[in-house]
Length: 503
Image (tube, rainbow, N blue to C red; front, side):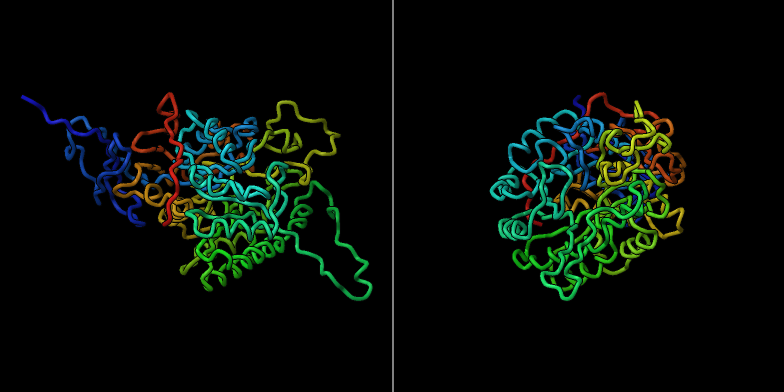
């Protein structure tokens, strides 16, 4: 007598899950052969509803969220693997419920500005990724002919700098370069993204004695005081750059444009007006702009250095107001912009908590705590979900799991052209699931928690968190479990190299 062979499945259920953008009880059936969700039931079905022996977990009362999609992560490998790498960076992502990361084209060497550069990146990533990984390409002067071939090879979008990037292999583009790139990509299935900071020009002609005046060419104030650094990157840098981008948008009316890591609330009216006029432009902001404030940054604590800079508490409040605006917010996504480096490059004084330099520099080293010499970037991949939840708890903001799923799952997937496979718990989508406990409390860095990236330096070290990720599942297989670590001995993440198609 033959027995019926059922396709291998796993089942996850909870009294609370985000399905179709709303909170509901749900049971998810995931095919282990395809890694995709085959059924979604709007109730918690018992194990007896499935064939005997079916792996089944009721996660109630924890929330089942779609796996987060972090669309802005610097993994730096190859070339600067001592800063970060695919193995450690994707482990950190998985520990925070992030099931897909999109790697930025810098600070690897070579950068992802050519097809050959992408090939080297892919070779370095193979067999090292604990979650799924996609790639952005870069726009630099002189690589115009590489852009369409990079699309054919699977890059999800392109990023260019309008100001010095900090690394010589990734120079800034001019307005002329941007115009050429827009025309080249006008009808391509991609997104053109910008680090939007530019130094506003001095007028060509001025009257009276003012013509003999020069703008300050050096910082005004102690270099270890954050307010000195903040004053050197004013909001006008962002608004001028965004105005320049918008002035060129007419060259490619169908090309989606995107502002990465928006920090200045003064730019919001410009973006809103542009969207009202029909320009296809969106913006993202970052966890650090929503949870850190310049007034609280101690002298010399260069863990907080990033560009654009962390601004005032009132600016942070304005970003939250825009995100929570009931109408059409211009800020669609929240990402980490995880941009790590070696501890030595942060120039942290030994007195700063969390400084884990193996051999701290001497106390008389004048570079210690210098915000202008230290490398910029905040390490935070995998911390985003608890950071947002903690912010809601501390500020009494009405932030819901539905909001987080929109900002960090559905909209980030849409931004990078993965909206048909990532970012939702729905039939046909990848079985990527984040199991979130909103009540747990823990401290970043204690027992190694929350900092699985290569170099254990972060502005969030020592921060008390409300809410934690209990488990992370990628395509129906458990990758990470809090307290037990990684479920498999070898990483099983995929490299997302299929050509993007138009939405």
